[in-house]
Length: 467
Image (cartoon, rainbow, N blue to C red; front, side):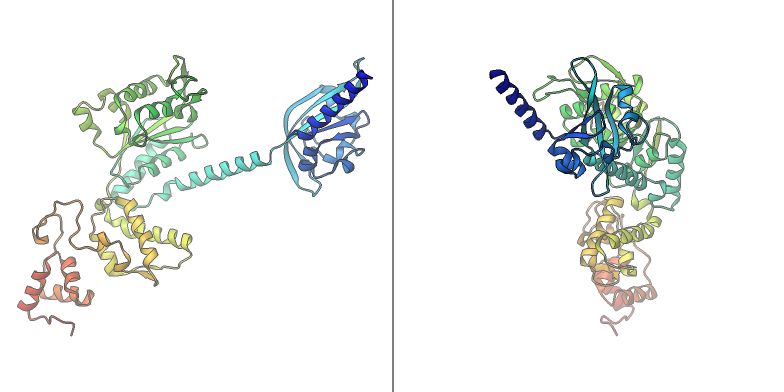
């Protein structure tokens, strides 16, 4: 009696175990008929236990078990020849007709004499994993689209030189140093180099070196061993290892500490990394692209940046011009940003008025292309017409006395950074008409003070008010 009770308890335990498993489990007899079916299989395949038990296993229509689709009968199934299936990705047909991606494993059930009694199979639903893979693939495609060479806007001679250097270095594995002010598009250029190179299908890993402290940056770049420091609960590969076969982009490289500089030099020289807390050397096959808005050579001269590392990084330099030096590209950039904002907001803004364009062209753009993009986004919030006008622009761009790149001087006429045009009666009349007789706006456009505009208007008998 005790043996029988023990057997009953064991059966109850097995039944409970099957019911609570997240994986689908079912068994098939020698005739290929389903003999058991747990609740997880009901969720994965859509068939209830009553519908499945007694039905042939071919109803699941596994599209690939042994390199071919599910056979019509159990005798043709490769499980009896192979003996097992381990972690085979395939699809099953759901009750509603959908294909469900699954991971399948199977084993033959045998009796005490070793004779086959049937098969037990486990099925893991991979739908979420497949969706994550698809999202990652789409993100990678979008990233590649974003970094296409024709996504870098510019027709000026300075930008044509940049395009030439990108094409020249993309096909090689040369280390690239991108230099330029903040907002000039250094990451976009780094992406263009990678996505136009033979490594384009491999990872493109970006690290902002100025955003992390020294200890965190070291662990982030090189990885760490379990127990290397507090909360290092497991081994972790660094970003260099994650970029295997592809490109790592180190932004703001001028901000790294001397200890990180030493380790980075070893990576560039030996193409190997050591995780924090271990002495094992790991080979890496990567391309290194760095960027900075600082004067690296100046840092070398004052001793805060290693000279040998500087020359290792500057094998192939790409210099990005500031926006103020390529104002010919501004109308094209504005058109591009307006199109982007139209898509994002659903508005239909057709362009920018001539007075607003004149202000934009006169502004020095210390924040470069990024600041211009933000200015157009700001204008979209305020603009209620078909064209962006002066008062849709940010106030610092509209202020006639605002020149961030120049030393503040008491008078605009004394300011060497302001490009003052030669004034004549005809010129002043034209500017006044364009400014709707606004003397402050006329002063801003001509580069003279408001008092000087009044003085010239009186001198040349130009009416003080609009005729």
